Image (cartoon, rainbow, N blue to C red; front, side, top):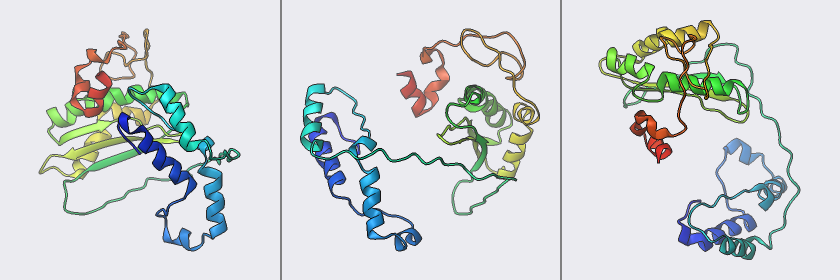
Length: 247
């Protein structure tokens, strides 16, 4: 739940009540039909505990007031033993999967590639690759598909890292009368994307990890240093998240 800073006590009141008195939740009917009352109570006791529910408070807050309010509303709730962390692994995917959904709306293409989990050494290279391919209007996929070939109205690419594994999506909106199939073919045969499928990328480094100058992001050329100040990169202002990152 999100509240403005002057509603600290309201947040604490509602959240502490939720922990004391479980409210109905929505789940799959097949799971709910086979879930017993003791199982539900035990799950709530083990996982809906203060020591398993971190809270983040941001803004112009008085730390002493926050502590007093937290102790007032949460102090009487007992902690529980930390529940075990169950490892989650996605089952192997021996081949390509395709899903096509039809409804009256603007067509969209979403290509998803599996990526490693957070903390894997390859996350840095994939982050740079996403910045090179499609994280702004001045980058390669946008210039090729939107500006040069005029196949799409927008295109974006970049990694999405998760704890147990992630995705590297490439998303595009075809420009009428072009089709999703045309855009997919253009992405697959686009030089950097095609070369990435055929060989391992080699990124050069300067004082910071950043793509090399050259016709391909994995050609070893003169390194350039990226400033830590995002205001030096005007293309960040083309998206809401970019504006937030530059503020």
